[in-house]
Image (cartoon, rainbow, N blue to C red; front, side, top):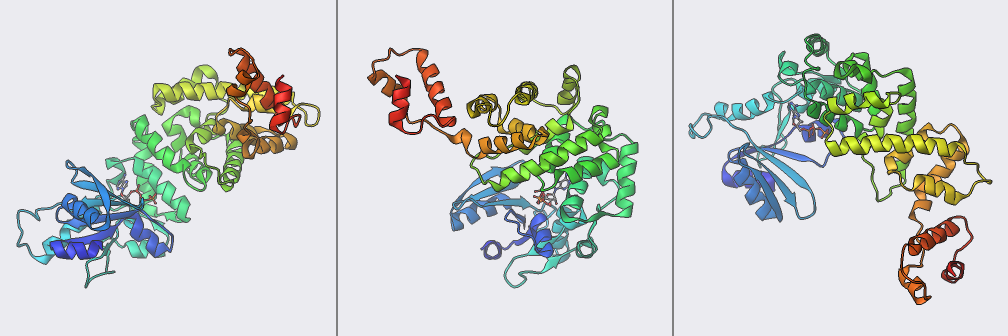
Length: 403
Ligand code: ATP
């Protein structure tokens, strides 16, 4: 449909970036990025009209996002060049506007375009040897100033390298080391570092990326306190396992991976030092407060869990220890617990216990003639405990207990 629309408007349209890379790699990718040699925003509007959807446009960048009615997103960019000034330009100049667009990208493997106009549909546009690099499984920058222009590309290089099991090319690796020698990393803003770290934490195997960063001295370049010690690697290994287990539960509540992994990355840092990290990574006030709180809660819960014994301690006690803690913190506790029975019971809590609801509510208590007040919370929480410990199951039994 996009190709046909391009034809109607007289503009060349290309699928670009990760979408094309993943086609060649045979990997699924639903994020379609289009580049239009024309007016990207106008194209996006017409596209949304045709297929049903809405458009968010950034006039400044001449880009737009089409959100189709079925939820899919299509990013549309404008390949800019003197295209407008020379409408009768030769085809070669027309071609060079997509070339310019691709040249601004990070790596050859992301600088591929696929023509989608009818007649030329499926033609690969490869100016920089991307197909060869994909075949050789190599991550390569397009020019030698790439990392100076944008040091976050170093983290992107590592992310793609680990995700696809590629290798960063020789010259590209020299450029990375050079950028590190120039201390480009220490000058990089916390917001940008954190942004890239978050992408890394969303990968299948974030630890592989973090270890590659450590190997290249990037962790310390971000902040000396972030050096990836063996202890941290061990905990992070457990965190990846626990996180994968959690993903397999397919629960509605998805976690925020960085909150989990940053706990592991900063393990062992004392309370009075931790703010150096939250400030370096430019946490917002709220993120910082929540992160510090989470660390405290975890410390507290670890102590309490030491005294919890399966069979002897009540399940409701475990519930009350874990209930106030965000899931990221609970997963961290699970990863940190050496005792098998604690891990098993925490997993029980996450997959079942925390969803328990009691059938009794305030109205029931009022009907029973109990004067409304703080006592309601106490009664209801006792009832919850009774449910958890298996002392009450039906509504009738619960009401009796409440009396
Ligand atoms: P993913 O599969 O992780 O979504 P992607 O290649 O689609 O990978 P995005 O981060 O969505 O990556 O970026 C889309 C495209 O924009 C990339 O393919 C790349 O060409 C370009 N790009 C993104 N970030 C940069 C950057 N820092 N420098 C240059 N080009 C970039």
